[in-house]
Length: 104
Image 1 (cartoon, helix red, strand yellow):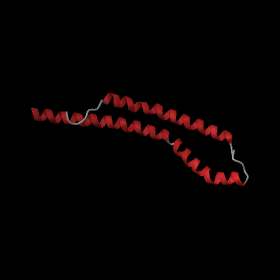
Image 2: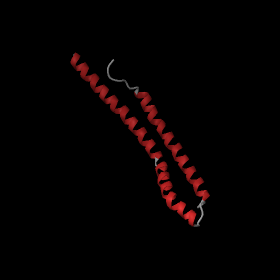
Image 3: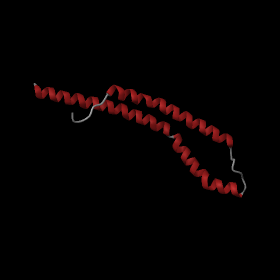
Image 4: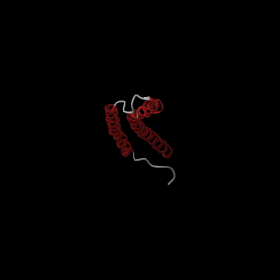
């Protein structure tokens, strides 16, 4: 058989699973944020500590910002899977209708 097949039911179910993944990722990010905040400025305020902070804190904040945004990305993936399932159903239904018209 040429082409491909889609299990639309499973695709929709899988899309729904991403909500849970998004929630879990959000919780992990919140837990990590709380843990990091509890340490405070642990590298010190002396010259070495300031040097460390100057080279690492901004990069760590940027990385954490990306981690914190993963939750929204999971939701977006689930939405795209659901939209793909819907589009596939519409296209498949349209193709089947066209084939029925040709056969008639």
